[in-house]
Length: 499
Ligand code: BES
Ligand code: MN
Ligand code: ZN
Image 1 (tube, helix red, strand yellow):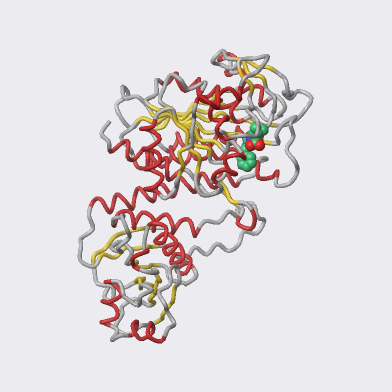
Image 2 (image 1 turned 180 degrees about the horizontal axis):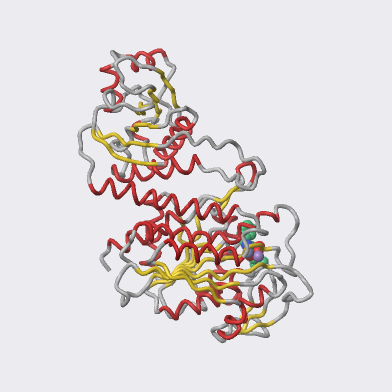
């Protein structure tokens, strides 16, 4: 898809379909008023007849409207003007994109940029529209023997401005949203691929491919022998039952002077989590192919910022393996030594994410990081706490937490701040090792974060538990590409912060 911004009157500019908004009060947006005037009340007559109420996220497609250059007009209901906030705008824009994709129009002209969305500017309106265009067009059918005829009619999207000229800031909004959307597509594709295709080796190949495409990225892949030498006994304990070789993938993006400390992203890359000897129940176990969505979000984010050419240094680290039962698998009660030297009693082999992350987090210190953020489908408890709306956010520094929360608000990929208080730590006490890998049912997502915090004392750190947000179940089963928007926005903000 191609995007551009153009100044001009909606009735004059030619396209396959011009979109204008109408409110539930019957009030027309500025662009709709201009169209209506030119078409001699064609639109207000339809509204008077009651066929378009302006209810949020409803649409009405009109053909050959008199005195309008475009072939079609799409009316988009925006709801009540006072209620047009970020969420409502997003619902409306998604509905609009679906309606546009159902037409045969190749080029469309959208008057969305200048809508009065509470607390948001034109750049934001445009970004969200670009993301919605890709979001609603996304299909994953490459593994069907006869992929649906992917018609992909919609090719060009123009954002119309009534009076203002396109600015550099608006053009940047378009290109950055495009890069973010491509990053989300990469993350979704990797998440949706099954465990027999998307293995640790496959993820490593993806990271090598990224380095081939971008001179600014350098990828290295460590194998099990290398990890052994580094003393990653915790990570290696998870892969013991699997025939697939584990990988530790590192992508270094150099966008600023190499003396500038990097922001390190660490993504959980369990390409299938059966639970190991602490085997999971059968129902919906297939969804544990998504247990590498943290890793996928790191790949997607690194791709996005490389595409943007952000002036920032970022390192992506992906510890990747399968968690499988077998005669060689780790057993409940086994005690392992992590790279940090701390020993861990593994009471449940299904709490494996923290076991691979702790060694990756120790390894992250080698890069002398400014900040480390890990992203993981870590706990079912986080889904119970926050559902599928917000990712769980934990941090050892409030300032960092607030920056991430803000990036989530900006990108509408939200997180919620959870506690990381000392009072939870004793739940991890073990009789036989420095700690155990589970803390009981109470506060399961907090004790998982507490476990990680024991390996991140030397730097500023945040942890995102994306167990509830990385994919959808049921009829709409599929990866969401989250939290690529949040992470990318955070990095854009950091790059703008001149550091
Ligand atoms: N990958 C799972 C977490 C998960 C579960 C994500 C369900 C999304 C949906 C993780 O490895 C896991 O199994 N966690 C256990 C931890 C428990 C054994 C302490 C869990 O949440 O049940
Ligand atoms: Mn598990
Ligand atoms: Zn897992």
